[in-house]
Image 1 (cartoon, rainbow, N blue to C red):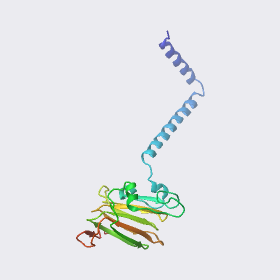
Image 2: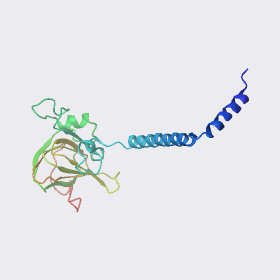
Image 3: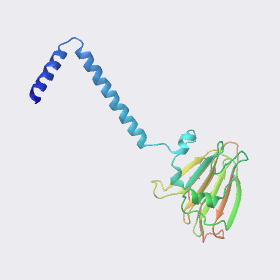
Image 4: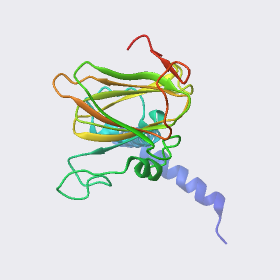
Amino acid sequence: MVNTRRIVIENQRILINLLKKPLAFPLLLGFFVFLTWISLRLQHSSSSSSHPKSAQERSNPDLGILDGDDKVNLVRFSLASLSPVRKDDRGWLLDPVVLARDSRLKGGAASCLSIHVGEIRPGGLRGNHRHHTCNETFVIWGAKTKFRLENHKVEKGYAEVVIGEDEVAVAVSPSGTAHALVNVDPVRSTFFIGCQDSNMPNNSSTSDYKVWKDL
């Protein structure tokens, strides 16, 4: 039968003899430094995985993005690679209603009953209003463009992102939600399609205008 107490005593004796040797302290110091390094690496890895960068931050670190695409009900695609909107070298093609639905963007137009196509030149603004009787889906491309959407889950009451000139984005604005598009590109024009699911008269009874004073 194994004598546990004897084994413990023997191990203690070996450890004491080891500590008496000249190289014992450097070896132990190196061992503890190694353990500290491993611990710090594990903590850094855990912190990085708990705060992953969004897709637009990884692909566009210079855009000065303020919020996540999910907070503005938006999905974007790079024009430089194949994607659901660019299936071959001819360029991109999409159905805004279908793409918004497939991307699980909630609150967009159920159909394109009313549609408008427009341009925003550098420094220009479109929107900055709130529709009460329709949902709207946007397709945005062509230039660096700020898209702002009312969002009361965000402390400042809205969220905004910047779409790159090499991207095409689809965004949705549910009924009763303010939105705005601002061209922040120095030279290029922004182009957009607005798709609404009702024929809405443009008057103060159905819409609120100039929602944000800083735009």
